[in-house]
Each structure stands twice: as structure tokens, then as C-alpha cells.
Image 1 (cartoon, rainbow, N blue to C red):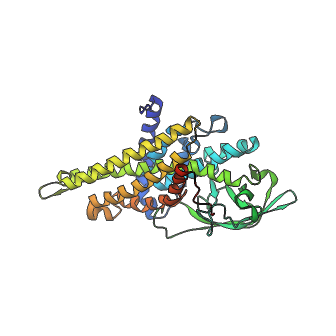
Image 2: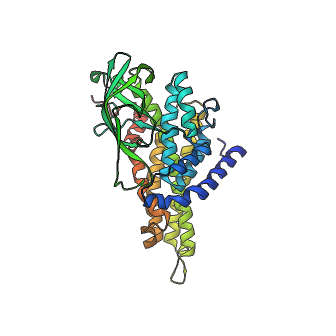
Length: 386
């Protein structure tokens, strides 16, 4: 395996890092303090080509491979998880689903608008009673003349308050469980589609999170993404891509924790010397560096497999599990290195600590990732009852 990045990848990475430091870092603290979803900054992400990085150029995207996409997401994640969430949802969940499962008309209609940032999209899978059990959807799709009627609700949906199109997963036949699921492209301006912002989150204060209510929402037949019964496959393929982007973003948090902790430890003095001279502090820094590098290589492996068209579900789950847990650990250690200074938002480690916690929950909890890995090892699906 070649660990050297190409000249183009190096340039894209450096550009993303410079953009993050210049535009995102400068706004991240105030956006979090004010619970402000920064649409101006979202527009800048679009101008950089980050909202459709993996979408082919013919549909308005940048046409990048997954490894390069991961480099971008890592840098954005280092700056602000709220903005990384925008990229993950727009690109990995919404665009990738339309690209993989959409008709030619759907691709031509939706992808250019999403890649340009003209429209935002959201991914309506999670419900109050359907989290890890994605097949347990209570949202219903009833067939009517010329289309479908959708009724139900969704919970914890990123970008929902600002999305123009929502991927809504609904059950067409409850007795079929996952074989009855369907996915619909829903215009959020249609009557009966309403959202409500979710406040008082532990972290991601600069991110838009909402619940969705679907009250007899009509969608035409051509709003169906894929076939009836393919909804579960649509969701799982999207989550594979989403997990990759979350993992890459968490590598960025790990890297940020290393950089900020080294900077602080070499400047902060106690007992007439920098705290970086203490062996236990160096041990923390060293462990943070090891976990960062290991997480990055796991992400690169998953991306390289996907770029080669090889199966990578297990490897993506490994990357997501390790990177999210490592980022959580690194953020905790970074606060320890900073001491009391790390407990307030004068330093970004405080925000990273709050923002990273959710990454072990969404796109499949750490426990779900372990079950996916265990299934690959044993051939036994622990999620299916005997």
C-alpha cells in the first residue's frame, strides 16, 4: 500500500486546511456560543466544492475519490464539527444516495442544486422509536392515485430546518419489516411537512438539528428513490458513506487535540519549566498522536477500498468505531493537558469535547459497529432474533 498522497491530494488537503483556518476557525466559537447555524459559511463550503466532492462533474460535483474526500472532511472536522456535519449530511447521506439509487431525471434535477449549495438536503431515517433498529419505522407510506401519502415523524435530523429536499424513509407494509421500506425525495415546501428545531444539545450548538412531522404529505410516484422495498438498502449504503465521513471528521478532532495540546504544553509553565517537560504530560501527548495516526490510516484504508470498488462495510465500521472513540479520548486528554483553561471555550478543546460525544451515537452507535464487525468475523448476525 502506498501511503504517499499525490500532488493533487496534497494541494487539496493544504487548501482545505488553509480555508478551515481562515474561515471556519474564525467563526466556530461565536457560532457555538450563539447557537448560530452559519448559512454564509455553508455557502463558502459550497463555493469550495465541498458539498459535492464525490459527485461526478457531470452532475455539478468535484468528481473526487473517497480518500481525497476524507482529507477534506478531516480538515473541516478539525475546525468545526458543525460544518463537518453539513458536508457529511449533504454529500455522504443525501448526494450519495441519489447518485447510487436515483433515476437519471432525479440525478439531473437534484444533484447540481445540492452540490452548488442552492439547496440543502436532509436524511430522514431516525425516529423516536427507530434508532439502531432502522427497519422499525413507524412512518407510513400509503399508495394513492398518482403517488403516496406520508404520515409520521422523524427525530434528530440534521439540516432539516433549512433543507429543501428530504430523504424520507417510510414503511409501505409493516408485516414485511425491512423488505417493506421505501425512500422518497420529499419537497419540504409541500403542505403537511413541518419541522421544529431541537435546542439544549450537549454539543454541535452551531449545527441545525430538528424533528420532522409528516401530516398526510403527498409525493408523486416519481419521488420514489429506487424501488418499493429498497429503502433499507438505500439507508444502509448511505450510512456506509456517512460513517466514513464521520470517521474522517473525528481524525480532524484528534489532530486538532494534538496540535492544541502541544502548543499549550510548550507554552504553559509550572515549577519554572514548561509542562511539556513532564513525563506524564509527554505520555498523554504521545498516546494522542498514536491514536490519531492509527485512526487516520483506518480511514484511508476504508477510502482506498471504496475507491477500488471493493467491499468495505466492515472496514468502514472499524474506522468509524476507532476514530470516534479515539476522538472522544483525545478531547478528554486535551482538556486534562489544558487544565482549568480547557474547561472554558477560550480554547477549542472545550468545544471538541462536547461536539465529539455524539459521534459515537449517530450513523450507528459504537455498539452497532461492533456487531457489524462481529458479524463479519463469525458469520452470525446478532441483530436477528432466533
